[in-house]
Figure 1 (cartoon, one colour):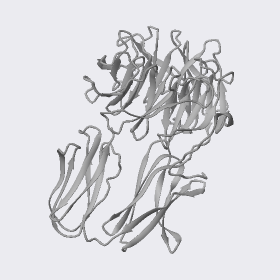
Figure 2 (cartoon, one colour; figure 1 turned 180 degrees about the horizontal axis):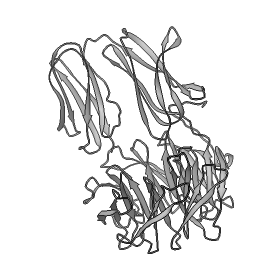
Figure 3 (cartoon, helix red, strand yellow; figure 1 turned 90 degrees about the vertical axis):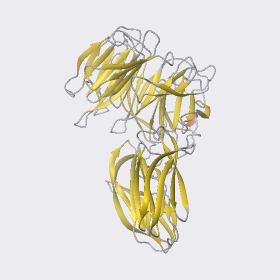
Length: 532
C-alpha cells in the first residue's frame, strides 16, 4: 500500500480510460444461448468466494475462489425470465423473478463448496417480484403483481419466512435500499424517490419525497456509507445519475442534477457504494467506477467495458454489479457474455475518511475513521517536536474490512502549547504511508471544555466528553432543532475533572441535535447528527 489519503479526487476522461484502473481476473460464459441478468456474491466460512449469477433459466452458483478458473458448482432451475434478482442472508440465498409464477426461491448455501440445494419455493406472498433487498433479518420484495408494492418478510426462520406487511402506499416500487428502519423507495415511472419509516414493520410511514424529475425512470440507487447521500440511478438516459443530500430526512436536496458518461449515450443501470467509490453497471459502457469522496463532484476513475461493440443507448451489456467480496474483487454480469471477475486497481487500501484532534482537560484526544481497510496492521501515532515526528503510541487495525471503523488515542498530560500529530499506517507486509497532519492548541483549563461528540454522525449512540476546572453545578442536556429538551444526561454537582457520557438515540428520529453543557458561570453547545 503506497497511497494513504483523506480525500481523493481523480479526474479522467473516457477516451483515456477504455479499460482503466480495472484488471480482468476471470470470465465465464456458460449459458450464452440463455442470457443473463443480475448477480450477487457470497463467501463461506472457509475463505471461499462465490458468484450467484442470474441466468434467464435459473441461478448459477460459481466458485470464484480462484478467479482465473471460475467453476460452476450447481445450477438451480427457474422459469425463463429476463429479470431475476438474488440476495443473501446468513447461509441462504433468496431469489425472485419477474413475469413468472416462481414466487420466492430459498437456496441453502451451507453445503458449499460441495453443493447448494433449493430448500423452499413459495408463492404464499407473491407469484413474481422484480427485486429483493435484505437488511437486519427482513426481506423487502418489490415490484410484485397487484400493484407492485413492498412485501416485508421476517426471516427469523430463514427457510419459512412470514410476512409482516404489504405496503402499497407508494404505488409501483421498482427497487429499494434499506438500512436499519429506513427504506429508500425508487418509484419508477412516478419519477420520484421516497423515504419510508419501517420501525413498525406492520405499519410503514412515509417520511419525505423527492421532487419529481420529468422524463426519468426512478430505477434504483444506493446510500453513501455515512447514510447522508443517496445516489439515484434512472434508466431512461435523461440524467443517468442524480445525487441527493438527506442530512435532513424531511427534505431531499438535489446536489448533483445529472452525471453522465463523457462520451456515448450508454444507459445507467445499478450502483453500489463501497468506501468512497460508486461501482456501477452501465449497460453498453460496462463496469464504471466513480470517486465520490466529494459527493457533489463525482469523478470517473475506472472502467472495464464488457460490451465493447458500442456505447449506444441500448439495453445490452452489463446488468449487475457486486463489489463486496472479502478479496476486494468485483463481479459483473453481462446480459450477453456472462460473468466477469474484475478488480478495481485505483482503490486506496486504507482509506481515511476523518482525522481530528481536540483538547480534553490536560490531554489531547485523537479520533480517526477509516472507510475501508485492506491488510491494515495498525497505526503509529506520531507527534512533532522541533520539526521532527516521534512515535508516541500504536493502535491495532482491523486487517481487511469493508465497513467503516472508528479509532481513538489519548496523548496524556500535555503542557499548554500548539501540537501537531499525524498517523503512520502500516500494512502487514511492512509498507507504510502517512496521513495529513492535524494541529491542536492546548490551553490551560481556565474554563470548561465541551468536546465534539464522537462518532459524528452517529447511529444510534455517541460519546460526549467534557472537562470542568472546578467543582460546581453541571447540566448536560440534549435538544432538538425546535428547542425541545429530549434528554438530560447530567444534572448534578460534579467535582473538577473530565467526564465521558454516552448518548443513546435509539428511540429518536434522524436529524440534528444540540448538546448543551451548562455550569453556574457559562455554557457551551455542539451540534450532533443522528443518521439512521
